[in-house]
Image (tube, rainbow, N blue to C red; front, top):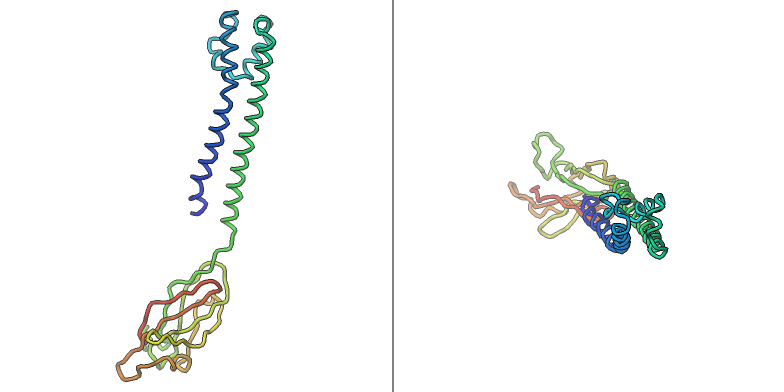
Length: 222
């Protein structure tokens, strides 16, 4: 998506370069039209019907191949035509090189975007008791299994539980992001529990610290 978002700028730059050099090249067209106009008066029967649309290269080949037309063109005009021809050639080379560079830069940027390391991201963080009798709930007498999904480059992460009332945290457990789960024993998280009366609940969340970012789960009741 980042590569695609850069395409308008790349295409705009290419279009500007092509337009700029084509505008600069109109001087050669004026020289060609002037010579064609003189030849229309001096030898109208020797010119093709659409000679006004010829570029400098085509007109130069036509004059070189026809002695009658060549005799009707002064040396000064013919030298101007050669200058225009050389100018058009240089401009064409410059335009092709610049467009090629833009194209290669776009290809290189695309390859970089495809092959660059994707930052690690964590999602779908959840916590529940390991005892099947808890039916997916988190009970403060059971081991708590924390699960997550990861994407991007694997890395070591630090997983901890946090009490939302006073922001106390358990000691972090370091695991590989691809493990996708870790278990906290009751003695690991018991110091966080402020409400232990029957029917009471503690507000907790899971904190996962990656090398560059912190990811947290939604609040859950323990």
